Image (tube, rainbow, N blue to C red; front, side):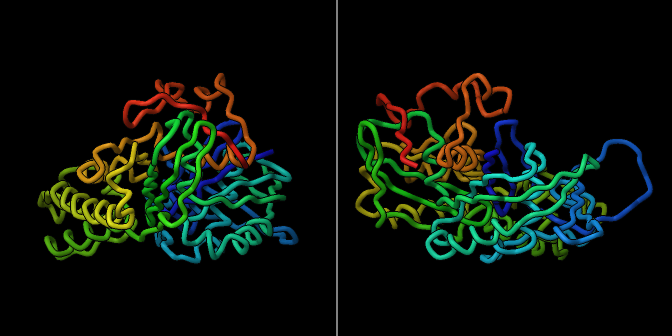
Length: 357
């Protein structure tokens, strides 16, 4: 069985022939409350490595973010060889129906890919455990083969139509990093312009940090990274603090605007003389909608791709040899109403992107 997992700093996304799964990349120690009342958030991961007798339990995703004490997120560059990554990968694999020996496709930010591709592959291939999620049947999962791919390139291959010629930019805005590539489009292929690839530590987490700073400045109360991200995601404009309403909407707008401007200007400068000659710019990743308005100020030809948060996971799946059949896309949630339509940042006819993987 082939699965692809986008091990994002903000969200973990997974795709297989059986469906897809998404959850926040947050962990917390599991706690037994003894209560079983009302709706509950998922997920509870139980696992034991080969050779171990006793199961370990941990809260994963929304349950960790909402109800876990000592909830943690990782923004470390070494995340991709840490136990947290193992737990996210096993949870995601289980949720999309994986069991026994699995072929896995994952991605790395561009700068990490250059230096850490092999060690990430070796680490993921070493993972094997008996796994249960949310009380389901225990399954053995082992990542028999692992293909590590560059982010942004994965997002590019997720697109069904591209221009027949000209320069095309991809800005893949994640939670912790933003990856950017330029390609020259040909009638049946694309050529990567390697000198214009870059990976930035400016992304959604940068804006969340700025929001935390403004909140502490206004209220005198520090927000944990997990709580700040929760407020950011919910998009609430006003919250009670010590019984008084606080306008967090203005703080979030400020953080989004300032970080968006910084990100757009950095990419524009890096693409230098090519920036004004682009036929189109594809915005993808979980931060595409967050910073679209600021990016469009410098790149008026920029457009958000369909289902931007899933672009890398879909691209990894395709590059690793997976086929998402048109008739199954809606059942998997992979097809929006315009998914089959040609994606056109400007006005041009398109051709399917040739998959050379």
